[in-house]
Length: 184
Image (cartoon, rainbow, N blue to C red; front, side, top):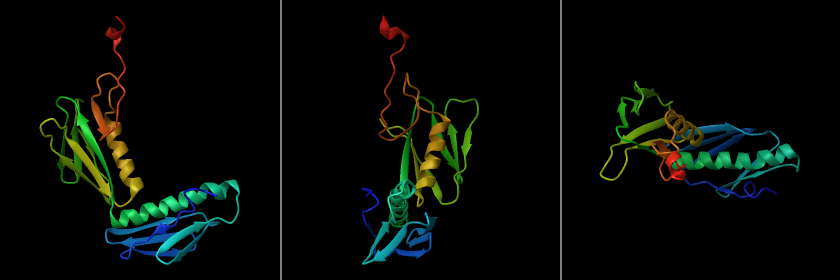
């Protein structure tokens, strides 16, 4: 059996989960999410817990079992607590600002880079402090959308492998390569 798929999902009291065939809807204090899972899987809801089970050990059913459980778990945690990704700007003169809902990045190009987040995803900029780089916080209830927006922002200026400058996730370790002069 799947190590992830067999774990039950605890549903808080302020969250309602409705299952109609392959469609699962989760409603909580922060919003509502829905997902459609594989038809072969069965979802049981009892005693404040949700369990996902598969009919047999066919390859497709095994692969969908853990995925369905994780998607439902992410929706439950998203509508209660929300999801967040944090990025930091590392580099002299790199700046980020918000103009309404649009993120404006000045990161070494001859032009400004503007990023409009989709509905349901909020982007905020935390100004640089002494000994701390400026940070960009991406938050929302949909984990996949938050992760995609954060990846799109990071893709604008990936960390340089020689100096480490660029946009990176907070806590991300960049292994720097030695330059030409290192061998001498």
